[in-house]
Length: 255
Ligand SMILES: Nc1ncnc2c1ncn2[C@@H]1O[C@H](COP(=O)(O)OP(=O)(O)OP(=O)(O)O)[C@@H](O)[C@H]1O
Image (cartoon, rainbow, N blue to C red; front, side, top):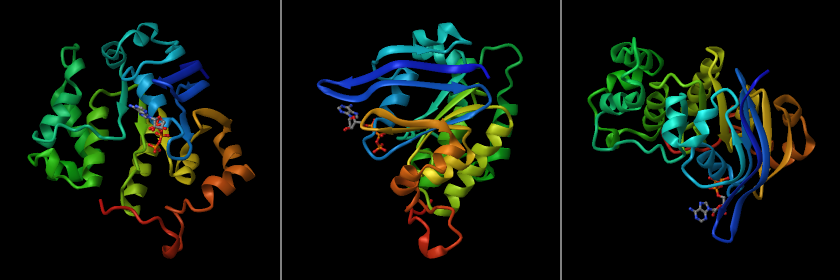
């Protein structure tokens, strides 16, 4: 399948600290590509640099949209979207206005229909519809994550990057979030998924990369990575968000 994103010897440095070291990675069309790894592995640095928010070394290519690697604006115009770990909502603005801003870059396109797009998002997240006039900074953690994802979807992204969509969410909301990511995948959105919740990420991914200390330690089909003894010991032993045993579930901040 065709690659949407190709990284070659991709490196991110902050002064003397190398956060991402010589990473080669490919994300293919129609697939979910997961990047898992512990705190400080370089996952956020990687995805922020791919979006153009942080400088990088090495090669970054969007083979289908060569112009997209030039600037953040060009990436957005190519309908590449990032939901950052920090959510970055416009706190003093309403849910509705945050969604409208998500389509800012494409609102002049022919046949653009703001109402239809907002209706799509509200179908996906009925909770947001109920809170359409509420200010973003008064939403719960789970609602904020829904709004951040909804805002990114206003672009109708062809390539969606999600940085820790389950972070800080209660187990039920985490399950809901992964259900929606699976639905987006079924609708044909190509996704780069950064996650610490390795079990859930590997379940819905096609390919996966394990990042540690800024470098790729393992890569392959998600099913093979999930069956790898080192991954089971390091990442899957305690990651039990979907465990059927309540006492094993992760304790998350209430959504
Ligand atoms: N702006 C920055 N300036 C200096 N160092 C940074 C900066 N951002 C990140 N780092 C460092 O780079 C390394 C990788 O951080 P990064 O946030 O990319 O990791 P991560 O895998 O996303 O971690 P987490 O899962 O905890 O979010 C860390 O050692 C971090 O302290």
